[in-house]
Image (cartoon, rainbow, N blue to C red):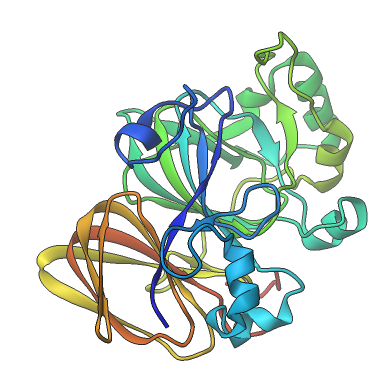
Length: 323
């Protein structure tokens, strides 16, 4: 089964910039590119196949035609479970929160969102908001949203390239200006916007907030700092992610055994993937889909590659809580 190169869905939001076009080779006619949905079967932004017999088809259409490509671990999910993005935060994103599965399925008719961030690049002094500095009451949370002082109680975490943040549903957060992130998440587009700096969109209107929902789902406590992911960047029931970091002198071996596809997102450099008789070249920004039945493959070059798969059933968070 050949390796598939994917074309992302492109999203233009008011906080985006130029980095994804300039440094990551994304083709987009608009002026501001905020996100590229690199691996997506979500109807709000499906990625498509770049070449080969399925060129121009969405990833969902390809997987319907070749069901073995997703892998047996995906079969337990009603929908394809993973969504992977590149995000260019030229300006601050809104302060926001995502619900868990139970709340989202009941109220939004799709899954909630646990996600992880891998910091690809950032400006000196960049930071993001991640949980609260200390535990506060729901009443104080509501009051600070109303009077515009919410950022005073949020945990501002400095960032550097290579840092990772695991964001369980219910954790308040915001990517701030000057950061490029690879985001690996449950396949969901449910976001509750809590505070947006009173910014206005191109039509002169402030963007919608979702205060009642946010009050219902946000855990008003400091973020967890005791995750133990071992040699992985992060994992939950929907995804497991690691990093291939190659200096040009060594190669990384991989293998799909039928249980899950492997997503290879190239965040730095260039190289090749060899699988059987096939050799695929890649550069920074490329997104490759290795089918679940592809077998052994070798990645070489001078590059950083974020690799994601779907783990076996009953994968738990390190806390013992099931996602």
